[in-house]
Length: 156
Image 1 (cartoon, rainbow, N blue to C red):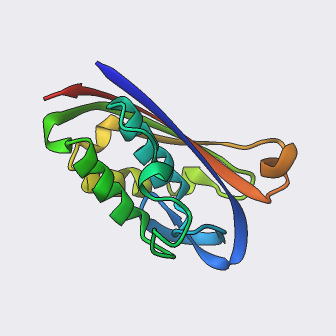
Image 2 (cartoon, rainbow, N blue to C red):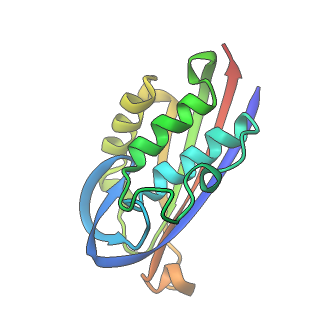
């Protein structure tokens, strides 16, 4: 069994659409070079980490070598190629959204369903939950939101 973890944080922006787990949801989006999907960014980092393949920024740096506003789904698909996803079995995925702004309980099932589709796995293997920051710090002030992802895999 192999384990990887990922983390991502972005500042909120009312000028951007909110994309989480590959779907657009209601709320303020994120300032980012890509679409700012904190779930797919942290999940991609966790998948890369599980196979010791560096991190998302190595493959998609926030500069001109990465297309501006690139879809995080496109980034995830590239990560799946890098880790040779066809040779991997996912045991489970655990995702925690850290936010004072986003109410995950209302959208967690939709996010888990979309992640299951993107990864071609059973939705029962994916847990999506949220935690607030009780008005503490940059997340608690509603200026940013973050995501932590943990993935457990085994070789197929």
